[in-house]
Length: 238
Image (cartoon, rainbow, N blue to C red; front, side, top):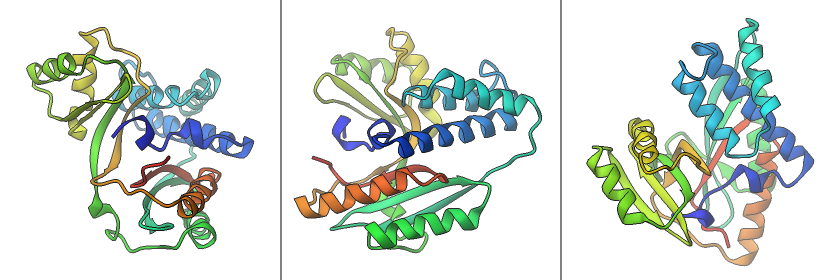
């Protein structure tokens, strides 16, 4: 797993509509984290993690601050999380997480995307058994052995440490993500391209050119859905 193996919101935001959707999903997640606890990232781990996650995906400071101020203002607005599993071109499988104030609209958006650009939605569990929930940290670096040793010595529950083209990917148990960040800080590593809990495929598949084009069209359509929060898949993109 490495830079080419992840679906990055930065690459999904190629169009104006997708970028707008990116800012919206960041705003919703940060707002809900601030509303659920104290609206101060220093005293709210979930909020701090959400801010770091979206900063890494080029969400602007004003979007982040507006979401926090909205929570501070006592807004009654609320969002409900949902998860959908489905199949795309070839052997592609996807997990789509939503966060919406209208769960019916969220379902219709996701279903329409699969009907138009994919194959079909599946039942709960039809795809997720092929994925594992992990903490994921990605950052520039080459000192794989030193990083692995530091994490082990700090008793971090590490799943893997991989180096790919001067880029390090660390996966941990979901509950160990923050401990891994703290251990890496001792090495001076504080900036991350990715720092979040996500669904990681147990195996990756490679699609032929035609199927990959169809699959990317599905990703693009999902990226423009206002209620879609995260998309995880098992495709090794070229």
